[in-house]
Length: 65
Image 1 (cartoon, rainbow, N blue to C red):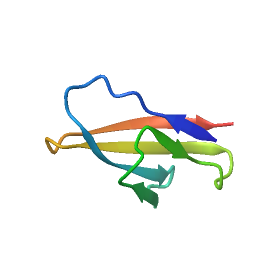
Image 2: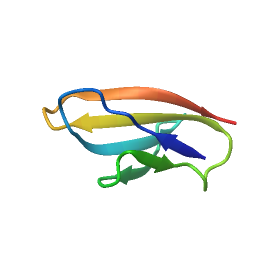
Image 3: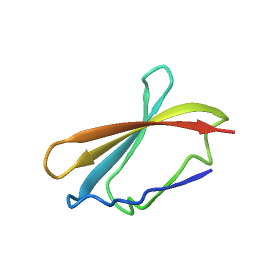
Image 4: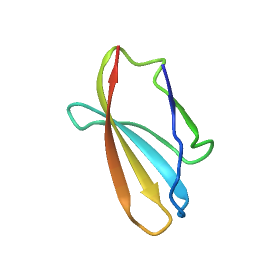
C-alpha cells in the first residue's frame, strides 16, 4: 500500500503524479515525496510520474498486489 521513493539524483523531486492503467490521474502529491500511499486503491497496475526541478520527468510502473 505504500511506495517509498529513494532519490539518488542531484536534483529534487517537485511532485509525483499517480495514474491508473487507463491514464486517468488519480492524485498529485507535492510534499512528503519520500512516501506515497495507494492504500485506498484496488490491486492493479499504476504509473508514477516524478517531476524534477529541472523540468525532467521519469515514469515508473507499479503493480499493487
